[in-house]
Every structure is written in structure tokens, then in C-alpha cells.
Image (tube, rainbow over all chains, first blue to last red; front, top):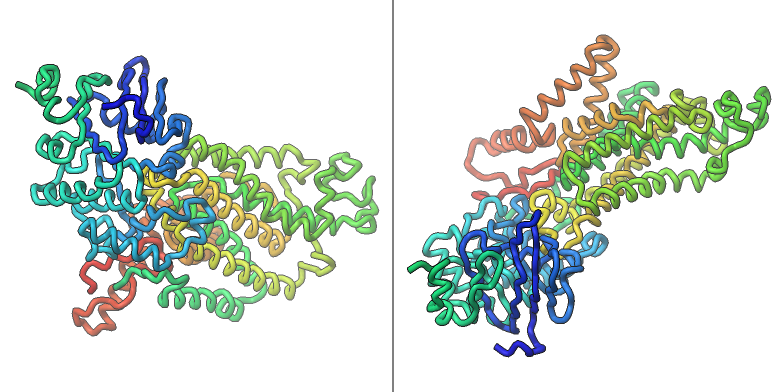
Length: 249
Length: 388
């Protein structure tokens, strides 16, 4: 990788967060290129989710820098980071259970994000078409009027992915998108993810190695808040350090 | 197909419910009640303004304020200050050592009108202040709390403390506020005597019209994307934040809106009842207002109006015969509602009564109900499940 490439979408440099002295992420640096799918793996407690939390502003960093297309994210509010083009999917499906699938998607439509913008938001043809299109992609076209509470676990995960898609972020961060899914759902999700990661940068946290091999451009292995190894799946898989702490013998 | 994807302002069913309430407020009550009782119901309806605001803040947005009496009181005091100044002409107050200032100031050895009372000589300014003062105060509280992400129980406790503080302040500053007695002996509004039966009846209708204006405003908010965002925030605040919304600003907005409604209600209370006092500002009335909304149904703006009327009617009836037992009864009622039907009367109506009535009218056939089972302007979207 060319570390002088000025076209990185995301540059994380020397990122550190300390919780009462415990450094969950410790001097971490990595760089994401346009259209790259970066997968983060590592044992439990390695700091994977914390890294995503730091990038999207949910957790405040102790030191370091996160630069997205030249903008420093660490000083921005969560909603500003989202509007700058960073989307985040949580580990457990977080959808609005009391609203319908249609309404869930509508709230993520990238328009009317201010108080008065949302008060006078109009549900016009553009909005409806885009929602129909996304619903088709996430296999929920027939369930648009269903309350989200009545969806299955897998369908909720898809809905949340759809909510991110409608935002159309340049950088998409997914935290274990296939966890807790049935085999059939998992296959469908892999297919879905392969389609949506096409023309954007993606950071994925995942444990399913088959799935990782399928989608990853590059893999970062985290261990105790630091990069243990980085590179192609092939390289990482054969790295003795990785085998020792994560993949097993 | 039940979810209203056209997103109309009122569904047909909701329009019927609005019409029924309008008939109750503008026809049935005025025809059935004598002027004294009608005035009493007018007073109850002023609390409904607060309850509607609570439906938006608490029911939709999950923000429980136990200090709405503050905003009711601020609106009421702004109105009372104007009326008091009008009643305190030099001729009317000739026996005072300083004629031309409100009587309670004179009793407290104050010899000149405080500067912040001066603008309340103007009716226009006072009417503006009825809305603006509560909203500005709510804005300050909202920014201080919501920007720091104070929510839930902590927010409720702080609003409660604010209600207590304001009451103590009003009582302590007797010379400027009338103290524990409040501002009393109000007579005319721009020369129009508000103490006559005719005036009280007229004010009842003005009150009803304003109530419907607030109901329509609340309905607009509920139907807007902002209304759905409030529900979304209640369930998944983080998801809303990470969908690009500044959650705090939405909470501030709805809290200010609730304060504006409460302020209007307070002003109408002053006009119809003829005084304003700290007993309407403090902790007890603030909690009572939450109970009105809970009994009526905290998800339903119309339910909140019925809840307010019902609880207050019960209060008047029972406290006439058993004054000591009333507060206990009110507490028991609140607990019973929360335990057995958490969505209040509106929930009881839409979940129990309407489905049964529909079955009855459908003649026992399995045909599913054609319209939304979520009635009385409930906030939840109807489940359609098997309905198609």
C-alpha cells in the first residue's frame, strides 16, 4: 500500500482512547482507500467496536486523529459526521420498532435533517421511488407497511442496512452484519453486502472467516487495541502472530 | 392497506373524532351546563392545553416533564399582570399610599411600579409574552439539559425542582408577585368586564377555539416527519443520532412547543377564573397535569383532553363530598391506569372497545376492520398484519 497516497478516504493516525487508564485502542493507525472493503478481525476485547465508535463520534478519543476526506472527525458532533458521509450500522439491529418499514427508511432519507426541515418535509415522488428501490434491494418490498417490530431478526438487520443505503454514505461501517442469522439469511446478506460495497469504502467487523474471505480487499487484525497484522487475507492468514492470538493452530 | 402512505393531515377516522370533540366542547357542554358549571369546564379545558403538550413531549418523545405548571404559571402571570395593571387605575386605588400601582405592592411598601412590570401596560405585549416568556424559559432549560444529554428520570427530577424553585421565588417576592395569594381582583380586559356571566361564556368559546388551534398544531407535528422522529428517538435515540439528526434540537423544539401550549392555557385560566397564584405553578399541579395526560392516554392528543375533563370533573365532584380522600383517590387512579391500561382511555378505546364494536357491526363475519384500529389520534401506526 502506498502510504503517501493523498486520496485516502479515511486516515486514522495514532488513535488512542483510555477508559480510566485502560487503553482500549492504543496508538492505532490505518488508512482506507476509495472503494476498499476493509475487514477488521480480532479476538474479543481487541477494540474493534471501539474503533468504529471513535470514528463515528460515539466515543470521544483521548488523542490522535481521524481524518475523513481531509476533515477532522474527532471534533465533530455525531450528526455532523453522518452528514459528512459516514454511515454506521450497530451490532444489534437498531430499527424503530413502532414505525413501519417505509417510515424507518424515510427517516434516513438524506433531506430535512433540521427541526424545520423535518417539520415541513414532504413525502414526494422522489422519496417514495427511492424507498421502493431500496426496499427491493433489501428484500423487504412486500413488507413496507409492516411495523418494524414484527420483522424477524435477519429482516431487521437488512432494514438497518437499507437505512444506511438510503443515506448513501461514502464510508460505510458495519459491525457484525451477519451475526445471529440463519444460513439462508447469511447467504442473502453476503450477496446484499457484495452489491452495496461496490462503489464506496466499507469497514466491516466480522468473525465469519468464510464471509471475510469473500468480501475483504484488505484485512486488519486488532489485538489489545493495536494492529497485529495488516494486508490481504492470504497474508494475514499465514502470519504466525495472527495464528497464535486469533485464528488458532 | 392501512398505513397511511399518503400521509394526510387527518385520516377519515381521526376527522370523526375531532368532530365529536368539537361537538362536545362547542355544543353539548354549553347547552347542558349553567354558566357557573360551564366556566368550571372552561377552567378544566385550560389544563388540557398542558396535557396536549405532554402528549407530544412525553408520549411521543419520551421526555417526561414534571414541571409543566411552570409554563402554565408563566403564561397565566403574564396575562394577570396586564389585567392587574388595568384594574389598578389611580382612581380605583385612590385610597392607597401610592395610587396607580397594584394593591399588593402598596401593602408591601413598594412605592413605584418595578421596571419589568411597565411593558405589561400594553395588551399586545402581554399577549405576546403569554407565549414568548414560557417558550424562552423552556428553551433555556432545554438547551441546558438536552445539550448535555440529560434525560429520563434526571430530567423529570430537574423539572420538578424548577417548579419548586419558581413557586418559592414567587411566594418570597411578595411585593412584586403578590406572594402566596397570587394576583387577584382582576376586572377588565381592555375595558371589557370579564366577571359577568356573558363574558365568561364568551371566554369559554375563545378558550375552546384556542384549544382546537393547539390540537391542530399538535396534529400537524404528529403527522410531520418530526412527529415520527420523536417516536424514533423514544425507541432508538442513538440510531436517530447516527442517521444524521441533532437529537437535542428536536427535544428542545418539542419542549418549547409544549411550553407554548401551557402558556396559552395559563393565560386562559387567568381570564376565566379571575386570578393567578403560585398554587398553580408548583409540584402538585405539575404532577396532576401528567396524570390528566396519563389517564386520557399519553399517546393521544384527543384522549388527553377527555382525560383532563374526566379527572377534573371527578375531582370537583368527589372533593365536594370527601375532601380528604380526593388526593388518595387521584393517586390510586394514576396507579390503576399505569398498571392496567398504560395507554389510558384512548388505548382502552382503540384496543378494547373499537375492535369489539367492529366485530359486532360486521355481524360476526371474519371480515377485517377497514380502518385503522389505532383510534383517537394514537401515535402508533396501525398494525396491518393480517388485514389485507
